[in-house]
Image (cartoon, rainbow, N blue to C red):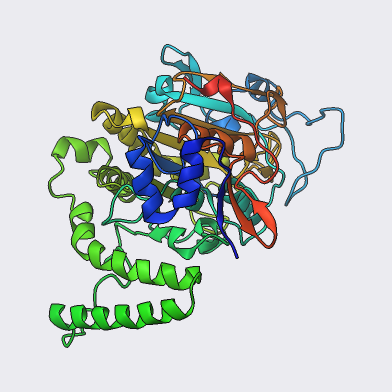
Length: 466
């Protein structure tokens, strides 16, 4: 049987493990614990994760490399064999953007992200992230689940599983995909894997005519009334409970029952969260809702803030869909393609950071901006860039993060991570640490193995902790 393993090291944790479930939650509160499952005081209690689908170009956004512009057009010759994923390596390609230092921290940011540049003093940068792969599917899985293969729980599912709900009326883990479509791996990147299905991401599409699928009866189903729906759900609940008694320990059935119960509550709570009419004109402008190019992603970001306010613990927002166009996978023309996709998200992301800060929510909200890998310092074709697992950039902000910090360096071309290299496992370990969870002690027994988000790797990164 699969079961949760938070290895008890204290009397309180032993009692929590012994009690389990709702009884364990009640017991932990009686004993003064902050949250069920916490191993240390939490700096953050909720998370927003931005995922730039496709491989955001680090040397055109946050990793300033003047050597690329100085040697633009020259042969790229680092002294070892050079290979590219989908192309023949071209000449050195300098960034087409202007660069400036910003904030008291003096962080370099390119002109493609002018709004995020105003927030650098609230961010902590991992400047030498490295991936085990330079292929999209495995790369996205690695950065979201800690494994390059499908079938493993994602970060949001682990957080839901380890820490539980903050609200009874909304899901713990909500996914907001790009309004134009799903990312690489489709729904696999926000799966609960072998964890109970109740911990998978609930997909919400604020810009769609039906933001949450199947939450309400279709418009044509006039025979479905509130009364008949209530009677049907009551009958379904009795049948499920009877089946549950005959099959104890079936987490799929438990999750199905919980999903029906949550859906009924969401019918009341979700419309209020999605209704932006009460937001001021100033707030709507802050998120870019007044501009066509930022309207959709701005709505997603503003909805994410409202979800956090209502008790959702983990919100994951995606920018970019599957495929080699319209996302961060800039093979053809770095200036044209990156300018387009960055222009959609730059103002909304900065707006969300500023909004959280002025509302006092940034203090206990962890914000993460990441991607699956970076791009190459040489050209693909004439002005594109190929995949590069050697180095890329991630930044964090908010609860427990050392504002204005930077850790790690890439080499002079931003080809390989060179100093203080960090991995997916380190990032995940640090995120869990900020949420009060020891990544080595949050485990789940599956097929005879004590599985964890960080597999057998990972170290907390103290250099970016406040």
